[in-house]
Image (cartoon, rainbow, N blue to C red; front, side, top):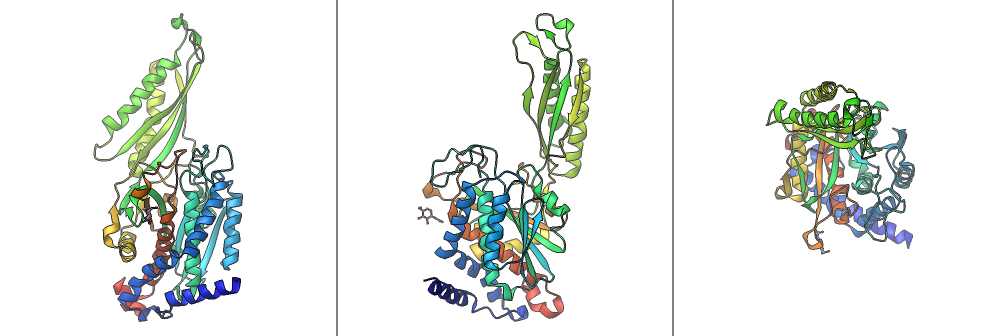
Length: 444
Ligand SMILES: *[C@@H]1O[C@H](CO)[C@@H](O)[C@H](O)[C@H]1NC(C)=O
């Protein structure tokens, strides 16, 4: 049984890739190049590989782990890499895993998945519901891991044809913890020439992808401020210094930052999402704590907001005789840079994704105010980030991410695995020296 299955898959692999000559990529015709993504996709769509990814995703979904605690997820990934015979290094950034497929020599191209879940209770009733109260994969990182392992499987079977090394980046703590930043500090990007990452999206159909060159997602930061006055009886306000009134003025003034100081054509956000102070109807408290987030699409705009948020909170508190301290919480929640897609990689993506799903299924994404810590990678080396469609009209709308009713449409998995594998494979071909590969280089 086991043997025959093995034989079948061997024949299958031979069938799929047998037409591609061992590279020597100079011998590849344009048609053969264009067939690489299509071949990966049809292999990824085989029930064997799709079901394997689905099983992995559901296992991870049942056991969600928060940022820097992804110990079992990381173990599962390493077990699967071991089974496939893929070498890896561990740990990076506490739980991160970095695998290597191909020649082990340059060039190197990275493909990335995040592993962490969110601190929220799942409300979806299904067989593989989270078994951990108060923790849920509500952002699809379970699916991201499964698809990157699917890509690893495709690439490992194809490894003798790889013109360099594909680096699998499994990172912790995307949800605010800046796991990508720690991966960089631990050397995970060493020697890597370019990196690709994706996020599933319920807004666009299965079999489509959305992205744009240049800034795609905002840079993001958090702040918390304590505004202190002097508490006392609510009926004798003149004997107190009221931090509640001062805080409301601080919040109103913060709203002037975007409306009066930002270029209207340069999107920015300042939101106060936390306001805590007082507990009785007749007591003015000593202090109020407020907190929130700020977003921008350039470093200059971002740093301007940061500087002005602090000035406004302190200055406006003083107007009403209060004092204030401002904390940007960078040790726990590092500022996420703007996610900027390299123009060169955009061209690469358009070609490869176009070969795989057809140019009609490539959607131009609007920039989004959400942030993504992939930006710590693309800040250092050329990077490219895109959204992978999972909407299926016949199944009805999907709840948005970070929602307790969030679900994943697993029909998207073959596309995710195949696009990862295709982007990496063709990028390595693209990096071959022109002398030997003049023909291929021109075609890419
Ligand atoms: C959408 O869902 C229907 C019903 O489950 C299914 O038959 C179809 O194959 C799905 N479409 C895609 C693109 O996966």
